[in-house]
Amino acid sequence: MIHPDTTLAALGDPLGIALVATQPMPKGTVVWAQDELDRVLPAAQVERLPALFGQLRIRFAYRDTQGDYRLPWDDTRFMNHSCEPNCVVTAFGFEIAVRDIAAREPLTNDYASLHLEDDERIECACGAPRCRGSVTSRDFAPLSHEWYASVRDALSHAASVPQPLRPLLAAGAWDAALAYYDVMRRSDG
Image 1 (tube, rainbow, N blue to C red):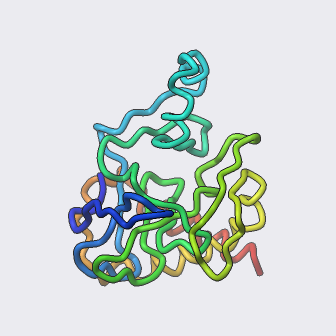
Image 2: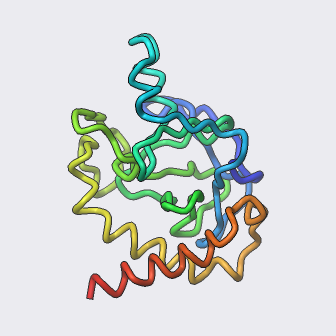
């Protein structure tokens, strides 16, 4: 489920429709949590779908760490890409704001963090100072340590901000995320 302080807005080219904050969201805010209405599709099931579904899968679903496809039921699917995202998805069923997000600002994540297929290539027009020009699965490894650090930093702020989605987190997900990202931070030296 997407954070209740969001809405869809038409931003024009090149972004089109975007998911934007209706209120300021401080760093550490859980902006999305997996819920019971989200569809989880095993990769084998997705591979059996007719080709007609190919572009829809690419546009509205993402792969998780197990290789399954997640199809959010709500406006989450309209979150745009940025090479300098303000949100990062975790392996624990939630996405977190990694910096303060202003009202009317689009919520973004880096599509490279969504376990793209090896042959997927998305042209990027995000306009960020560090825009890569395209997004591929090869971007994951060099950027993952930066994402881990930003999530760990955001988690250190999370206890001090309102968390309307926290009840949706799986039992133990919060503590597991804290422990995991702490280990990842320490392994970076």
